[in-house]
Amino acid sequence: MSSVDTLDVLSTVAAVGSGMVAGIFFAFSVFMMRAFAALPPAQGIAAMQTVNRVIVTPLFLVLFLGTAVVGVIAAIVGAVPQVVGAALYVLGAIVVTGTRNVPWNNELDALTPDTAAAAEYWLGYLRRWTAWNHVRTVTSTGAAVAFVVS
Image (cartoon, rainbow, N blue to C red):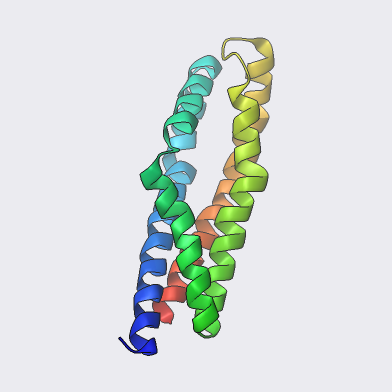
């Protein structure tokens, strides 16, 4: 396989992975968080706690982290579009998730859903978690587009 073929494969895998992750984030931005917010706080909190606990599976981690690895490799051997795609994915999906959404998920997980403290936390959590999830959605989508363009 020539280096052009290898780069095409890497870019395609990174594009598909970025697009799949963007779709997950999109679902949360568009309807999942709105559905949780429509529930009484204790139920919304419990639902989100459950999602946060069950999403971390080997298959999800391979998709989420593997896309970053493949994207970075594509950027190393590729050109500007691959670099842009990798930067968008790593910064927007990986870094934002690790510095924003996951810490807030951990704080939420430590709360007892049917308490006043949890209900108070929930209101701020919904706003900030969803706002940063929009960032993850846009940057993952942008990464997919950059890898497709390449």
